[in-house]
Image (cartoon, rainbow, N blue to C red; front, side, top):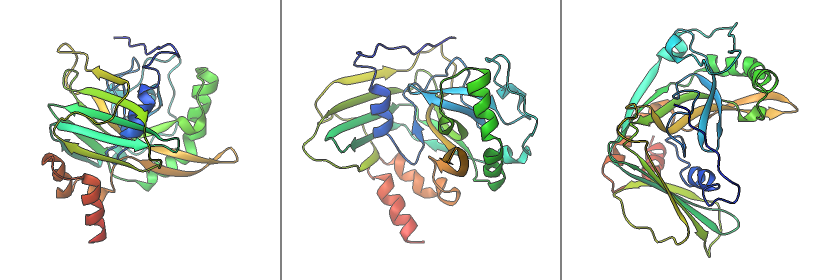
Length: 280
């Protein structure tokens, strides 16, 4: 199925992806405003690509042992001449987000308050590879080649720092999610954000509300990626000098019992996580 995300610049929907992802910025990962697969395919661990308009665009997949995850929508496809050891992608942990409403808010320095809510009536299943120095070194060594492929071979308008490597995801079925985003002026300024899981409730924020829903019963089960964790690069004088993890907690905490606090709907996970870290 070809999904094209083109919206006029004056549409109230045009700012919704940024509003949603900024307010839903969380240790669970980067929230995608378009969870359903882009026409380049469903998100897979080991993907190299970029986020555009709230959707993840796949360019290639680094796991050469998983032929079914190869990206075939580009001509020519990227040829991997320096493959990673397959063990990099086998060392995984799994997790589960319980059913519920995942809500977050953020205020920017201009006094605009954004709110996002992700409804997961069926929950979501997650996978993540554990942090790996071999993969980080590999990204540093090959990132320039991926950028040259995207820019020179495919002619894509993308900056090098936008290219990321997927390290984990949370996915649900196409009829088991909905998104709500809202933006309004607020009297207080600041840059703090918070996210919590709780039962659905009405919001106190006034302003334009935008809502999206899954594609329906006929959509494949368990392929809609709602949270994405990844490695991104930091550039210095045109060169990659650092690879950093975005989304996902440290491996010793990510799948600890503390995450089960999400299931109660009564606790702020970030506050509990901070308390857990300080007690170690």
